[in-house]
Image (cartoon, rainbow, N blue to C red; front, side):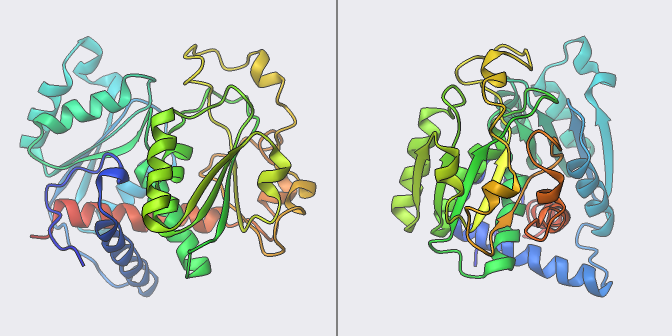
Length: 327
């Protein structure tokens, strides 16, 4: 087990070794068990983390705020629209000052072509760990919670058939960070991953190459299809979720001809019937009900979305405990 984490940035799981991720999982399960028993876990007593949000949040903000409180510390929620960032203050200056005020900085910045660069600039200057709460490229907190959820449901994840499937949605042009983080992480645990999407919703080529390298190293597999039925067929886990066409079309317009041409990419009972009899339906939430998925699926017996959402708390606590505390 890896034990030295204090001060380590958490920007993408790709930069964490498998042994380090295993430790994150172990600590997450320990903290979940303690939470269930009402056992105090004051590992970060009197410590402060700053939570910077350029976008809205429900699960991420509340898992971090509740999590640090349960660890004995305190979160400062920072709406970046009320910060001097709006007047041009640099990521460097913000990071240096906040890291002198507290013990961790967490940030969500999903602006395409900007978010990950912003986080990395902060990490270059911060003297405390910088935690990625979702950027334009990666969402390590979500991927870690997803991994924990799959592990607690099935145990041995080797050769589990997991399908990450694009789905139609009109709420906003969503980042690619969730499928990117999942396709990179799951093969490292021996899962057989199918990535399915209509033409035009590609993920970056270098991400697919990294995912295939991860699969080759750890015994999983990665395949791409543009056939939705193929992705559902015999799947053990399905993750139908929308993401934007950012790689091919960086325009911020939400609804366009390409999106409307793929309205049929929806998770229905009929699609679920193609999968294995014990298939599990996952979604990072919020789901665009009626577009991405039918209520009968997300509210049905195969759905594990609320267990998945709860695990955001326990994995967030594990990340903070290890990076802000420890040796």
